[in-house]
Length: 367
Image (tube, rainbow, N blue to C red; front, side, top):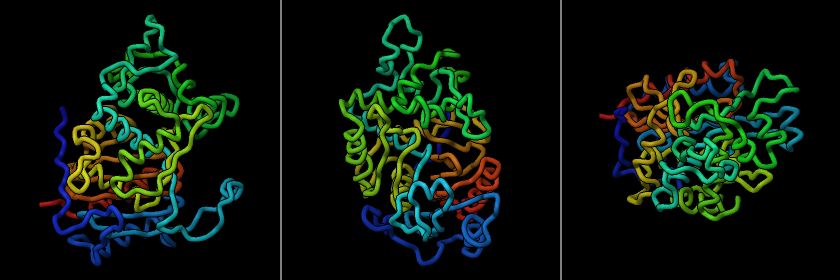
C-alpha cells in the first residue's frame, strides 16, 4: 500500500467558488516575482520555445485564484479549417481536454459505485466478450480503470506510417470512429488481466468503460453527459462542460471534453478536497484515493486509475494529463492547483513539465 497525503480542507475564511472564484491580491507566502517569471516562461513573449503554444495558465492556492493568464488562439491550417479566428483567449472560452477527459470519466464511475450501480471488482458488461469461454469476459471495471485489462493496443500519435495507423489514431479518426468502444473491445488479450504486466496505456480502454457505464445507467450519450453534469459538475458550479459522441452515441471519454479554465479549476478543487464541496460529498473520498494511488510506471510518472501520480515528490502531486501538455495538477501538501492548456510537441514535454514543477515549488508546503 502507498501512504497518500491527506486532502487539505477548504480554509474557513475562503468561500467555495461555486459561482465566482475568490481571488488573492497577493501571492500569499509565495515568491511573486519568481512565480511571474515562471509563468512568463510558459506563456508570453518570453516563453520557452520548447513549450510551444500555451492557451492558459492558472493557479489556485489555498482555495483562492492567484494566477490567471491567457494567450492568443493558435492559428494553424487545421484551426483555420475549423473556423478558429485570431484573437485573445478569455476566461469564458472552453478549452479542450484530450486525455484529461479520462479523469472525468473516473469521477463519473465513482458516483455510480457510490450509488450501487457499479461494482469495481465485477466483470464489465461488454457485448464483444459475452461468450463465457472468452478469457476477456473476466476483465473487471478495476482492470480497465487501472489500464490493466491485458488488451493489445498502440497509443502513438506521432511518427507513424499512414499505411498502418496506430490503434488510437484509427479509433479517433479512422475505421474505429463509428464505434470506438467496439473497436477497442475487439482487441485480443496479450497478458492476464489485472496484473502489473498487463498495463498498457490505452484511450480505447476508457471508451470501453464509458460505454459500459452508459449501459448500466441505461443512458444514451447525451443522457450520460447530462448525468455527469448533474452528479459531478453542476454541484461545484461547472456550467461550461461539453463532450463529443462517437458514431454509436458513446461519449468519447478518452479525449473529448471542453471547459473554461475556471471550470477546470473547479474540478481540481473538488478532487483536492477529497471529493467534497461545501460540506457535501460529491464523489467519495476513497474513490479519489483510488484514482491517485500510483501503480504502473509510464515514462517518468505512474498511472493510478485514470489519474497520474508523482510518488517521487514528497508533496503528493497527482494529475490529470492530456496529449500535447494539457495539465491539471493537484498538490495536497501545498494546497495547490495548477492548470495549463496548450500545444506542446513531444520533444518539448520535458521542458514543460520542468517549468510546471518549478512553478509548484514556488509555493510553500502547509504547516
